[in-house]
Length: 472
Figure 1: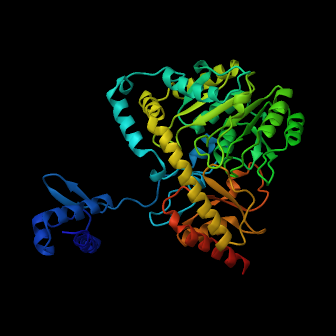
Figure 2: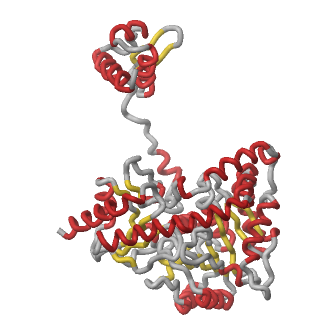
Figure 3: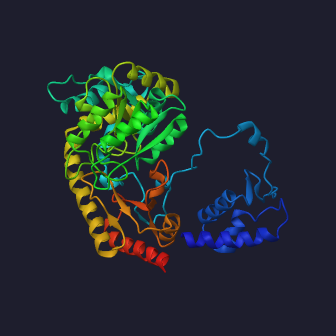
């Protein structure tokens, strides 16, 4: 019997239950089989559906009965208002980019690459190997597995000029993803109530992590041409606020996709050093270069001014939440202390699996293929916007990363636009979440990593139509 037969039985029993008293026993399975001319499997499937809906309850060995109706009025939790007091930070229940779209929607809002862009075979094989080894039952060191820390250190050391001292595995702390690492970094470097400089716009997760840490965000504007922040503005912000840390994404920034030049990185680093401060170099998109490769600012500093963050979650698999924080001196010790207090250690199974993936020769092959895939998808979305959405402006075509930062016409109601597009089957992310203060203009962040890139032209036409309705 197919699903239609099961649905037909469910509908009939719902009607029977509406007229039955509480506690009434439903006909036996044998009787329902005869009545509806269905198989016992189909009848049992229908009954399980009714149990899941809370309409009936099954008593093994006795039968199935109409469930008593519970009171619709929920308990009063008003007492919690006084107990909880004012929240430390007003955070959304779930950020827009983390919302799950319906299966048939065109997804342009998400921040995680789809399965076709991930090394799925490598991940499955690595998880199997890790599960068969000692990592399945052993407790790893608090700072992380030595082999994985050595791999992260070697990656950054390879980019370090010969005249500078390279990082070592002892400088590396493994964390369960970059979001958790950011919280530890902010708590370790910035005291509650003190200022933290951030690019504006910047990663929404960093904004949330800073709010949770109780620090005061100070926006530093970035240029529309993708050059990054003006070093003079960074200097002024340090002087006026007394801040001792600046959070930035010098490579393929989320959301703008901008990449600092080597000269800009040196200028900003000079300012940071002059103020005796830290630069938090979030290299989240290290593996997502398209026209260029990532140039970590951390590779240009050996005096401990740069705290480097790199995650494998997006490039390897969302199921392997593994990241590395690289810091030197007391800053590293404070970050490790915070990590140990929060989660003690990162799953050795996940660490071993991540190491198995990035140590496999096929990992480099995957990254070369990924570069070509991202270029094709980015260019298709850019062309679709130019052809089908003339009212949307792209100030920068990103040389890497996963997103386009699309500027909308002045006066656009972004929240309404997001709702209207979703109603027409296209999910986009409103840009307001990426601003630590008031948005400088209306924006959307459009991702080119979801399924069905062939649907980009049609999706962009939906976007332009929704904008047209706002213009009237």
